[in-house]
Length: 127
Image (cartoon, rainbow, N blue to C red; front, side):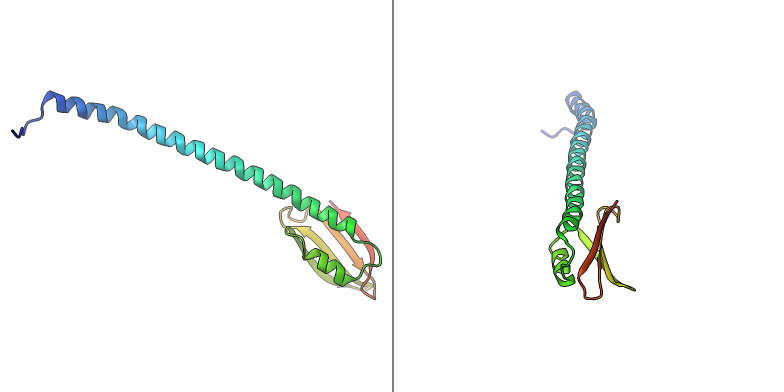
């Protein structure tokens, strides 16, 4: 038999659905917040690790470049680093390469100066 009029049981089911709906929404919001928080923490950890590695790359570069090394070898060394960018410019006494990390916005840098014969004459680490 088809009943066209709602029974008291139908109203009870509707009321239960109304009561559960906000709780489910709150639960979904809580799960989303937990996932977003976990992703934010993981991103921060990853950025910190990349920041540290980029700083180590700049320091390692300055420690591995010695007076008398050719410019071609220094550029070859620079091309092996992941986080380092460098600029090569001419100076009155030869040329210079300034290497820094794009993660540090130039905060840590290594300046290598070359003489007339494209050999390292000076290096310095700047902060």
